[in-house]
Each structure stands twice: as C-alpha cells, then as structure tokens.
Amino acid sequence: MTDATNTLHALLDAYLRCPVEAARTELEQALRGYQTDWIRARAGADAPPLPAAAPAPAPAPKPAVAKPRFPIASADIEVLKRLADGWPGTTAEVTRWAWFENRELVTLEPNPAGAGPEVLRLAPLGWAAIGRMPPD
Image (cartoon, rainbow, N blue to C red; front, side, top):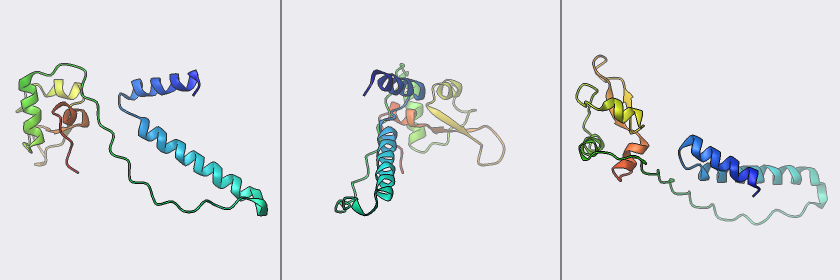
C-alpha cells in the first residue's frame, strides 16, 4: 500500500473510532469480483475458463470492539453489568446516565410505557467495557 492509502486508513480508523478492517476487506473483495466479471464480460470467446467453484468461506467472526480508553469507576461498571443482565435502568434511576451516554457506553430509548424517563441500553462500547458480547 502507498503512504496515502495507509494515511487514509489511519484517518478512517481514528475518525470512526471503531475497527473498519472487516468493512475494508469486504469492499476490496467486492471490487475485485466486479472487475473480474467486467473483464470476462468483455473478453469474448477467448476468455479463460472460470475457476472451479470453491466452497463458501466461513463468515468472518464479529470484530471485537476495543475496550474504552478511559477509566471507568467500579460503581459504574456495576451499573453496566446490571444493564447487561436485563435491568431496565432509566435516566431517573441512574444518576450518571449523561456520563455514560457522552462516552457512548449506553444509548437512550423511549420509555416503553409511553411516558416517563428514557431507558438505558448498553451500546457496543458498554458491552466491551464489561468484557461481554451482546446477545444476538
């Protein structure tokens, strides 16, 4: 890769603050496939035969979300664990909800009752902070 490509990849990684390698790999594979199909369509009768169909590759594992790069107090970790265990914490019950949301550890959803304080749900970074994976 050229220095410009490496610089662009580093900029994307820093700007998006998440691993983008899987998306880049998928995009490059799709581009190669499109180029191959385009060339074959225009090559005519002298085109080399298509390679034998290979078995479908196993789906790539989910990229791990990097742990947060800031300290999280043990009391805050306990709140995150309670949320992961299914506790429907609301902004009225979690005093530091704004801190959690600002650091992208949680997302806020409307109260299922239709009125009242918003409900906190763990974001991918919140799951990573407690060392767990979200249920599928």
